[in-house]
Image 1 (cartoon, rainbow, N blue to C red):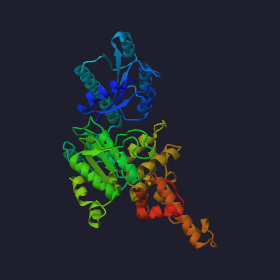
Image 2 (cartoon, rainbow, N blue to C red):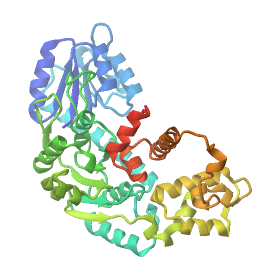
Image 3 (cartoon, rainbow, N blue to C red):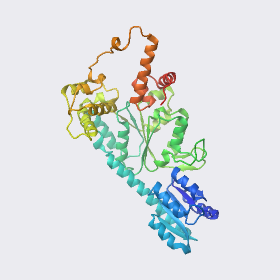
Length: 453
């Protein structure tokens, strides 16, 4: 639903314009003060501004200038009295989209609004497409020629043209979001938004607000209206990463939206209809969660129309040379010289099981490129667990014999948890998986050791 802000100190015009435009399917926000309107422009998700030219305090011309500093592409339609056309011409020079004269003709106003909104939508689509092309979200930037990856490419090719929901599974670090983007940018929705959200990184309340948006005053801190990810993805694709971490109550709300493709913002009563394709991902075995009653069966089958399993790196070791070459090139941008890997480094890379998958390999290569100084990456540039230079913990060297056992074990445990959280960008579910413990246990340990993220 497109949102229009109307600004005029004459309240009767606000009433008339809202009555004229709201039935067209637009969401209307009215404001009789330009200073307050400027605050809304900074904070709210708007698609069009209609403002009067002459107002006490801040004028419409000043509001136009400030708006263009915030979002140069956001269209502004100026309203002016018949005798001040020269001011309207000045506003056009300052990048107003158009102007209308009071009293205005209803059909002319509707057409101008429609064209302005279409203009802004195309601007946003072009920006999204440009970003997508610069990031190369096509088959070409999914690295790998192994048999498991060829099967993934085949699935992408089959499912991309359809509207079907896709469940992408695989351990952390395997590139599930990259697969989702490949599906979107090879689909008929490629010119519309691709919106993603990590369901495991937000609290239940915040996740609901991020998904469905909220109205002004819906809760403490909701100082203005905010559109949710479903609304932002209208016409395009919404990627729900780590959907298995969603609470049972939110699963119910999500199911209803997927069935009806309509919802209300948090704190709102207006029903918003959207057209969104859903791609979801999880590093959990959701079918097992369904059997345990942790994840709703009806939601699982709604999301799992097509299933793509992304292979672990240890299942596609023949892709390691291509991935390494890609990451070396990526991270050596500031270095002019060529960088190569010593033979024993290649042996170590092939032998290591890569529990962190491609993400861990990328971090390893970035570290090696940063540490390398002679153009040849050696074992000394790799972490010890990969290079094998230190086969066992040197207890005699680092821990004195008289060290208290319980306290020492707790220090080691705390250190491991902090290291896992740092490696996993503070995503607790990922860190728990790395340590082979449950998310609830890592949360308990974080509380015990006063670890904040």
